[in-house]
Image (tube, rainbow, N blue to C red):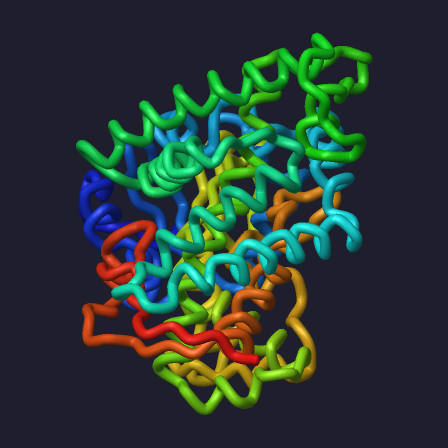
Length: 415
């Protein structure tokens, strides 16, 4: 039995924080393998990348999610007790609840709400100074997501809710003030969401049938029990927060259009080209770096031993940039998707495996729809200038974004 290559450092948490998206990939390259072990947050951890690793990682008989995600991430990004940390029957039941919201009609409805928000904002952008696209798209997505989910949101609350959702997204891998802001935002948001659930259950707040708020408030588990109010709040935020997080992908799409201007014409009015472009944005640009699991029971794989209880990290970014999977992985080439999206273990910016029963993101179809709508609006509904600014992506920062948030100036409507 071969030993898994090991880092020399007795503790690599600081190196992970400093290395960001490339921490696992750089060490895999150093060891000449797609697997190594290290110590993170004082626990032995196996790190993997590549398609075979993804197939293994999403095998529910070998891995579980309970207690896999560090508590600091649960307290900010995902929430404690949500679907991401469940296994077995509990996970299948909760995932089915969320997947019931992702019908093709519902996905198109959210896309139309986002379209309406975008096109209503264009007149306000005309004749003004530069706008920060990240800020604008975040607020538009907050409005659209809440309307879609059946969540009442006064205009006076939009900035506060958007800021809290952004803080949760930004704080999971952070230290110091960024992390503290995420903790406070999580507490405020869970209180707000739990109050909405309570009001719906009491009949004091109408929520449309089939909306996320109604479905989550009314949900019963396999024993016929409603979700505890805090858990219901976590799951409602698990609908709103990832939807607003798509604003990062929208900024990356705008950055790709700026860096590769020939694609502006290629995607205009061409749904297939837009789909390929969006998929390459999702592959090429950094979203979330890793997914975590724990070994359910000891097993051997490819000559390596995985002991029971060992934490395992799957490198999402590294798999999306793996040279054995993607020719010229560091080049932006949307045409690589002209034959359609690859299988479920090769392109994994939002996780791999099966949507329905596995741990792949339930909102992936929403993400693609919103990104396609954004690309259409950027190329067909408006013209704009991109003033000089810092558009570099710092891969040491998780999650990353251009420091400017992508400034857009001199916006003009098109016919």
